[in-house]
Length: 262
Picture (spheres, rainbow, N blue to C red):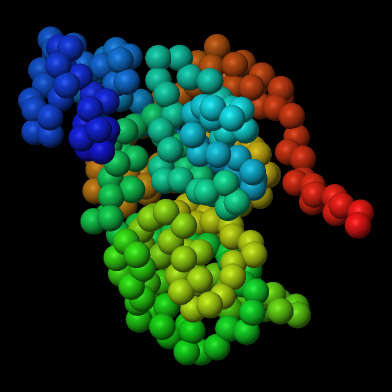
């Protein structure tokens, strides 16, 4: 939200908001010129879903080029909206979390919270002990220092080797850029964990599942927030969410472009 305020996307009583402005219940707040209803934090429903993002989808609500986005596959909400907890680039697959609680999302994404993100990475090229030590010790990227807190080899064939890496922030393409700093290329990248939530078989590629009360409470504790009861789905929500789930088209494997005849 701080970024949105700095970008001038938030208005209070038709005036562009500034960081530090105080807002009261009677004030009229808008985000991207859309009204925002103000409620006490404890009244904001806290729901969280896990989504298994396939390659080829964008982490944006709408794409001017008409490409597929992750939000197209999420269940519809009435009076709320899904907020992404972090992002994945178009060529990265795996775990994405979405919540209706903006404060939970902001805290989990903030660098000061030091939330672990774990990725499965397939790397092309010979990876040496010196490469791994350099990435764990830290390297200087164009936007500042970066490092993995853990790197574990998981085998592979030929010139491709799988690793699991852990990082404590979510800067743009940071995992890929760390490997590239060692002259190595990432050929596959999949997020398998965010904090204490692991990607599991409940969500196949292009599918979502709602997290349990215990899982949501674990995330709240990680973000230093009070736990809050996850609201039960109303009959209307159950029907709508079920329809949303069953009307989604299955994810198609990305086809390799045909080579041109010479």
